[in-house]
Length: 185
Length: 433
Ligand SMILES: [Zn+2]
Image 1 (tube, rainbow over the protein chains, first blue to last red):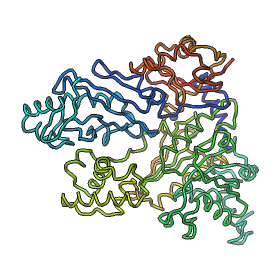
Image 2 (tube, protein in one colour; image 1 turned 30 degrees about the vertical axis):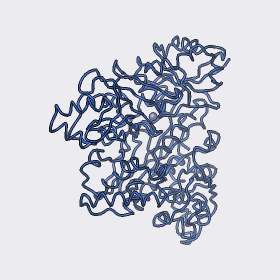
Image 3 (cartoon, helix red, strand yellow; image 1 turned 90 degrees about the vertical axis):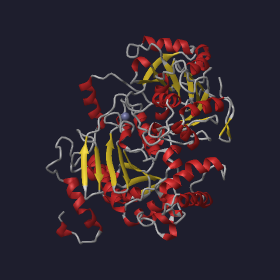
Image 4 (cartoon, rainbow over the protein chains, first blue to last red; image 1 turned 180 degrees about the horizontal axis):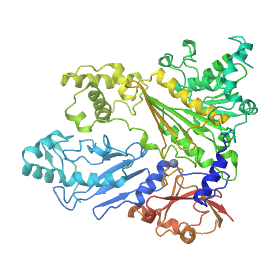
């Protein structure tokens, strides 16, 4: 049988490592949780974002609030649920907008079209990248990735009209027959 | 003994060629570690664990039994489905519905005399470290990344520097269609499955807006039904991918959408395939990868030749898409790997009456850590997080609670992160006074 033990001793001699472990029953932290802990401690939310953890012991599930301080969505307060599976970071976090809002890249159920949440996700990306991506959607809504077709059409064809619609929808008004939730902060 | 002395087809003939490898030094054997007189006997008493009794597992069990291993355990929670029979060759039609581990074990025991195979019809997570400690070698033939990560983390965490037997080599095989890989992980010595996570291509996904607005393929219509229509209409409380009624609902939705966009090709079985993310399993790929894995097992157990993981190359990738291509290389261990990058260090003389604040202060004084803004968690318990601010406020009251009040026990592992050491996670094991 192979002697990993002696190999390890050799390796340690070479590295002059000094780590040591002892046996016994251990409750260990899972890899996904370790990674999320690391991502959270490196999060930079700035003044426009905040988080809420319904259960602080479960860091795999939380709510992100975004209050844009510039752009067409300025003055609104939007919230997103983050649900992270044990497959993280192999799989991206599941993110959904909690309010019904008028936005070309967010549908009426709250699904978000953001490339790194789906087709362009990579394990090297972190929660900060996702949060920056969401923030960017409010600064630069994008007509070429439509999830709300009407909103995308409005943005493409009539930017001023789109801006008015955004204000109206954020105030809880009706746009093109669809009533939106009031999200003014 | 030479082949002239045994009858072909007789029991001894089965082992002639194997014994030549096991008893004689070859051009690649290392004379320092190879002992031809002891190998066969040593392998007989060696306990090997096989995880998975599916496409790869059937091959692995058969190969290990024919490689001279005598004491094999196998874990699989699944039962046999009729669609398995084309490649999972240890199963027959009459076995449909029975446990894979049980049927596979009985079949191989019957065909290979003298081998004992113990089946476990359950999840790998049902067993604790004491169970895994009894094996000398673990061979995985799984299709789930989650299960691989679990067993990897378990074996890495079991390493106790002072106990030679705590190092369990992990041989991992995986296939996807015509592609596959075989790799050997020597826990804490070579790069582990967590270090190699980027080697698993994430599931190819289509942008959500393509599904929502411009579907072009039948798969787009099915994904639309799966991720958009289902959530909108919620025909059942939760989607059960094995429930024909649920799949039929998705199929009908996808079909209607495909008609709307003039896309041909949506069928019930395609719907099932897309929703369950089934990649057609190729029997030949399974047998190539299983053979590679079991070769590694034989080499590790007998020292008859150099194996993956030592001294350098630890990862063999195989592709049969376009003729045959294999490439073997060294995947480097990652210093910031959350599983093997930092071994949990014992933290002795911890007083359970300390407050969390006192514990953190003691960590800051440790020379290897010198943490400035530590965030600390235990499994399922957030002790104190410096960031984000909301979570900091929620966990701040914990700072003045004692370790006992927080439910921490002797031997518990805590994970400490600090933005000053962005790439490192420190793990400590509490040792109470
Ligand atoms: Zn690792």
